[in-house]
Length: 266
Image (cartoon, rainbow, N blue to C red; front, side):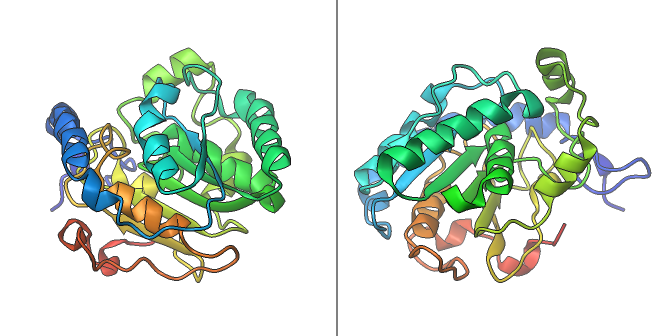
């Protein structure tokens, strides 16, 4: 029988990742170093049309955490924008107005729809923005973002509630909508080896314009600098506006991607 601590459903719902997985998050340093060493290869990723991209950091992180992502996307020709709101201390409802204002600002300045790349909690914000203003959003990519199923199944829930002043159960209708289908294309990138969030909380409902993509052995803290994840982000952003096709798991990082049948629907 699967151990509920490792992400299998238990009698009382999903559980946070086991302590061993949490301690193993230290491997994120190796993921970052790998992306630096493999940067010449990463720059061969598909290139798009240079549209604007807003990078949203995870809980307790700041724009500094998304700097490698922005630098990478900038090198591929995109207009990569920071969120400019300091450290992310949470608060789904509290942050809605400021986030929409930032999205509107970028859209007005560029005259183009904006793709959203959100890491962890930043991905939850990204999906909420796509719900609020689909006319401003081109694509949503989430990285280890707990937006579905039992979203309490993380090792950061207690701290999130303490710092944000929100309970995870608050705004149930909004959270249900965030977990539902979006009007724009979306990709959820996640890892079953995530030591912070239960991987099942990252699963969207696959459709003709939405997909799950599992990266083998990636950490939560390192997912935004993992070479295979970076390649996937670039590939997804390179799709023409208004079009969507499933991610092609071939290519230089093919060994790092799980087959699509492992991405169980939420």
